[in-house]
Amino acid sequence: MNRKDKRAKDNIINSNEARKESVRKHKELLKEIHDTYVKKNEDYGDSFSLTIKRWGYAPAIARIEDKVRRAGNIVIGKQMNYKEESLRDNLLDIANYCIMTIMTLDEDSSDNIVNDIVRKIGVD
Image 1: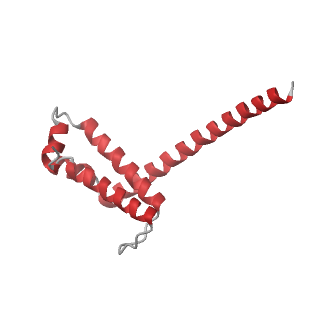
Image 2: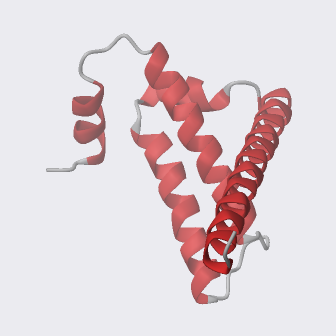
Image 3: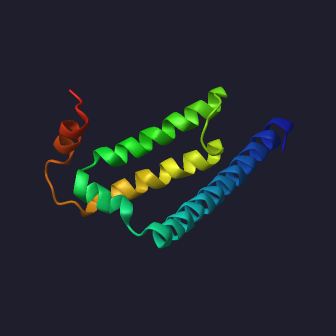
């Protein structure tokens, strides 16, 4: 095998190993998100989906937006007056809020979910 072929083979092997590592990390993060969901549900009950069922999807989107803003503030280094949270923590919270919103969406039998969101948050 010439040097060029060996390099190509090594790149494929490294690429496969990197892919396997990415899949492992993804699974690990999903477990962390799940464990956080379980712990917070034990502490607060199912307050997130109950809030959506009572007020619609606008509060869910607002919580996600708040976390996105906090993450943005962390990235730009803005001084914050609330408890220090890491970018990682905020991103994990965003992922969890998105998953919980999807869980409620999947349970919702309404055909007008998007119209509900638009009406409640005033998007044109």
